[in-house]
Length: 147
Image 1 (cartoon, one colour):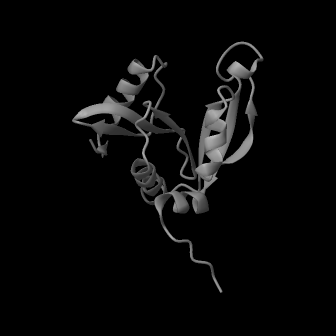
Image 2 (cartoon, rainbow, N blue to C red):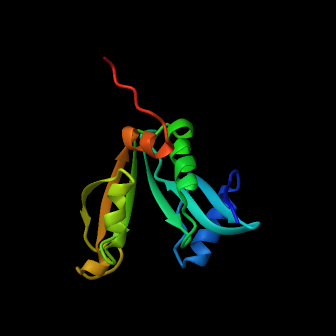
Image 3 (tube, one colour):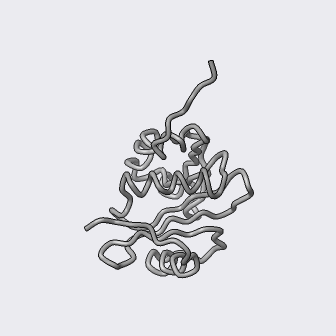
């Protein structure tokens, strides 16, 4: 039961993510599906791409593996040429907040009322960013420093 990436089906993958996770469709610049046993089980979406930064969204419980993370980091670095990648996660539940540092993301701030109309923790988004050096580590690349 290995998972793999579906490449080149941006519209279909984005449509699957929005439909299965009850989200309003937005413009997606690049989308990659996560396939397991020939079935789409996850989606990785890059949006708001501006040649330097892109916002990253992931859909699919249990679909993210170390190998998938490694390949997505390589795509962000070598195909999209990102200097930074932004992720916004809910403040509650807190388990996502603790995992972000493990993946070399740095906390940038909060966005109040990002997920809903009230000024509560449930509706607050936390913005994280990973820069090139963090993406290189995620991709399994060694970072060489100048002497």
